[in-house]
Length: 502
Figure 1 (spheres, rainbow, N blue to C red):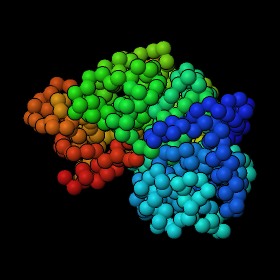
Figure 2: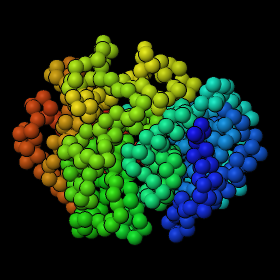
Figure 3: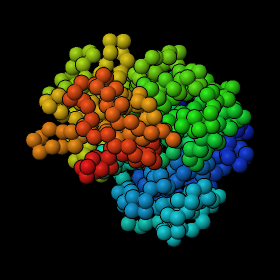
């Protein structure tokens, strides 16, 4: 049984080295042996650069085979891979490099113009990996000692949708365990091809896409970023059987289908559709299921717990937006945020989590780690949810995003659900704006479908039929596009900044 993530590849190098694993946009395919050769070259280069066990290797990347090889080579050396999305601003990339105390920086220059621009800023030189570049090794970088040195596989930076990003220390054990769990939940095997655009710099792309596929021997139709036309072509002509992505992907895909007047995409082999890494709106779920003629599966995961904590069942098509049932070796407890005591079944509270997938803490930030850890090894997620009697979990929002209006709790997700059902609305986001008396106003931002107009008077009339008076938005602001992170999550902190200026 694998103990480190590179051993997931070792199995296939021994059993089926010639089996295709990665399919690229230019029509080329790489076998497990090809990926093994890239990993060998990356390992040799890391050692030549003086990378040691417990060092961090920052990879400024968009998806490509060389990034996958670097992740696995770091595992062989004992270093930690730290992926950063190449489309981040220069200041963000440099801040992550400093936060990680990176020994060396790599850039996926040939697969990403953004990565190439970052490489030029850092005077990077050509790597032995085709199309990659690396900076100079930093002698002053400090290795992490055992046991962290041995346990941790990757440093995943949180998306920072509501605050400053933190470096999550994700373990080999957590990633390997979730690879087994995810593959089983999807019935994934060598016969499958997964459309893989979700960034490997994110826990979703790293755990659910790359490592789960390696565990199962499934193939990846690997893409550096999302392109709806390419996806439609891959579904129709390139044997894609599994499609996964955040809700924002499916929202963009549906908009593209509307523009092209396509009711049902051609997807003869597609058998599994999944969304995660963000809240799912019921209207979006229903539209996706109507388009593909099958269930849209859902799950609840977070960077602090490798992969997912809850997943819907392969055999089940739920009529709601539940994130499904707890996965093997994970525990979830719904608690009263004030007392830390469990609440009765069906009541809302903060989700506390523990299990094999839990992080080792935030990198060199004991204060932030202590702020979220509780007695008994529980992690206080800050997410609000309710657990039903059948074990199905419903995530209803973030504790920090909950709005207090006239003494009542307003959950943004409830208001967003009503807004998303309005004609012309593609998606929405709701935030609170503090008032002088300690109350909060409900501020709604709506992104319209292409060519749609918004009748606010008619919208408010419909909202009055669906929402209590204290949940009604004080302002409804139409925007061309909601601000999102590179992983597709709505950046509510930016919307709060906009709301403050209204």
